Image (tube, rainbow, N blue to C red; front, side):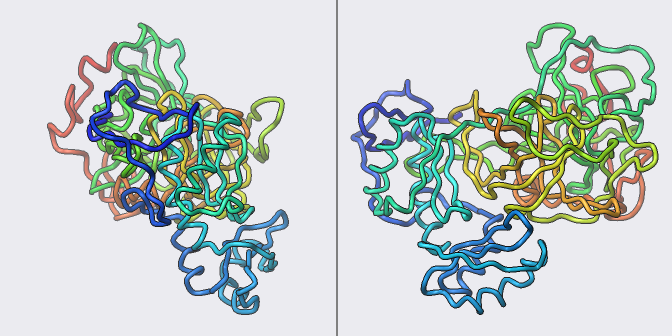
Length: 485
């Protein structure tokens, strides 16, 4: 983390800034500007683009979401024309049951967006603020706080920025906990044997399988594992997509060596290829931001991949999150229908159902509850994840990296994102949208036959393995000493 050029906020007594607290002040304190424009650098919120476009086209639109029966609930201020809104949003409504239900609202989406953008970075500079969300369901800017004392600070910042206090909804909030896990497991020298589970060895890689690696300085005979999100073609290379925290160094390309399902001979997958650094969250913010917990790893030429497919466990999946503990689906791959076929990508709308396949809890399902929340990460309180999605599907340690998708009865799916954690209170799973993943990593070909051709013993989509030297510490041509530790 680089903390040069640290800036200061006027913070009520008793509240504290996060990150770089040990750095001495280098200049006078500066107050938060009293403007409704964003105080930070321009933020690309791709998952809000559609709603913002409708809000500009339909005066008085306060946002929308899907209700419990699949109806599109449309927030309308008194200035709105209900018939115009219904006509404009008819295509969106067909993602659910096709019905549109109007609901009175106090604020337009564009007003809430401007207020959220003005508040988000100053608020997340407070250690006691865990999340900020433009909340369509409640037609408010919802702020998650970890202590009641933070409420006063939130109100004070709103007053400084000219944001009306009634437009705020302050609720108990939680940091997000990444869901990798570390277990005992020596390096294996035995020949791998084909299994029939997500956490067993599979000779052809597809989404949902266990992905193991070792971090520098780990105890002997231990390894960390996550879930392989999905295979893809990136910049002409075959890659696997998983989380950035599922590597030696988070938010940094470190050439982590990956294995399936754990370190061992014949199990090497490849090396980390792309893992962008974070960037400053903006003026007045001590935090560092990214919008996707995602990284890409090269796939070795000897490894077979199945691009466009996710392993399908026995189902149907458990729905929702149990208040008494984690809900587990089967990790046994269904012999009769062994995979889901990816047919495209999509944006996950609030209120609609999404599914995920993780190496530990298998196939689970739930509803999207928030679509663009800025959240702070447990264990890295200076790091902010922009515009993340919350959902109610069940997950646990080891599920990090799992593909999140919309499932259709014919067995096809559309990718909506990649899972990476859950809130501290265990009430919500958290995933990064596919739009944010591609915004940071680049355009990904994810469907079967993307680009045509075959390479590396699998349907590589015309991709090639990286040239010698693109990976260090052993490189893409083989697994050097770092793999056998």
